Image (cartoon, rainbow, N blue to C red; front, side, top):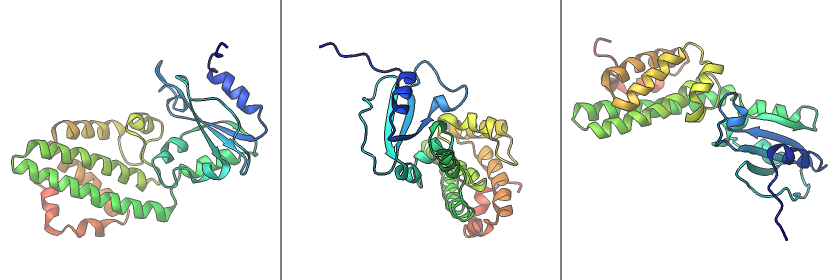
Length: 244
């Protein structure tokens, strides 16, 4: 018996939408970010079932399709917390049989609560300061590789902090430039921030790290996180610009 060819994305959507157990379809990944899809991009699709509904036979993963089948409760829980949160926060609703409920679930993932954001920002600020401090010390002591590794670590924590200040999940690295272009961080010039991150990740330049920290410190104190930095005591002097 000849195996039928795999379904295309559009064919799969039509097949899934015809199943009454399917209450929603959610597209995430490159195809949900305008201008980001390439010839290598598959379609990452969540198939959302009514709670308690048996899982239908919707085929298997193909080169064009990466399908995840979840219950409605599973969609609510996905990424809360977790790595998947950003992907779903920027996902596109393809089908919603629940009068907008699928869209509301995704919108909730895109916005951290005030308490959640404040706690997260404090933790990531401390982690950023820790890696920055280690990087600058390693550069001072002639440990160039360690300095670059710590500088790279610091940037991940810094981005988590900056997005938490705006009550948003941090985008994946692939989508950072896209995110800043379409949804800028208040008070930050996207081009300047990306240039600084590029220089620091490449060279671990101490002057560049200190200059960026000066801006971060001002933003952190304005947001009520001065105590996190004050706990570093005199070690802050190593992180700040030499003439600061």
